[in-house]
Length: 260
Image 1 (cartoon, rainbow, N blue to C red):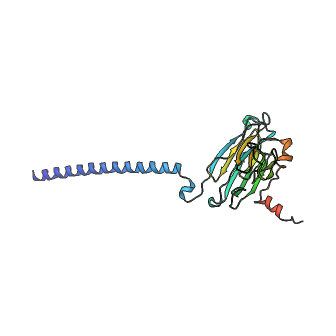
Image 2: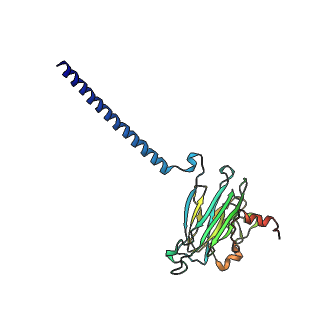
Image 3: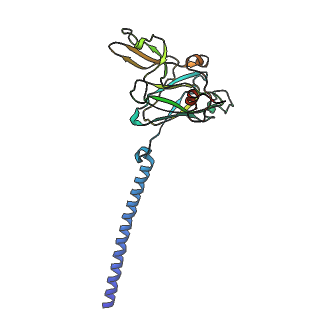
C-alpha cells in the first residue's frame, strides 16, 4: 500500500503540473496573440515620420468630365525653412482614365505626367523662398502649364475703397505672393505626392475664384484664378514644356550658356 500511495501521489502531482503548464501555455499564447495584434496595428498605421523618417502625403485631383481643351488652376503654399525642402510630385499613368474616353472611344494612350518640384516658402515669406522644377516628363499629350513659384493669377479689388496693392490695377495679370501653383489639363485625373500634410487647392469651375483677399488700412487686393483654354494658354500661362529628365535642367539651361 505504501508504494501504491506514493505512485498515486506522483501521478496526481504530474497531473497538476501538466494542468499548470497547460494554463501557462494558454496565457503565453494569449500574450503572443495580443502582441502580434499590437504589432499589426502599428505596422498598418506607422509612417516614416514616426521612425525618424519623412512622411509623404497623397492627394487626388479629379478633373475628369471637364474639357480637355482647358487648363485648370491648382495652387498651394509651401512650408518654410524649418520644415526642410518641400517636395511635390504631380503624376499620372499614361493610360489612366482611358475608360472614360476623354479623347474618344478606344484611345488608351491618354497622357502620362511626372512633374517633380522642390522648394521652400512663398514670395511674402522671410525664408529661402524658391521653387525649382527638378524633372518633367509628359507623354502622348501635354498635361501642365504655368508652373510658377508665384501662382499666375489676376489681381482684383476687394472693396474698391482702398488703393490696389503695389499699384496693381483690377484685372491685371500678376503673380501671387502667397501661393505657388500650376495649371492642369481638364478631363484627366492626377495624383499628388507631397511632404506637407495639408491639402493642395484646385478649382473645377469655369469662372474666376478667389485664392485669398488681403486688406490693410492702406491697400487691398484679391488674388483670383480661372481656367484658360489651350488657345489662350501661350499668352497667359506660358508655352508647352519640353521634357527634361536630367535634374534641374530648366534652371541650368536658363543660367548657363549651352556649349556647342
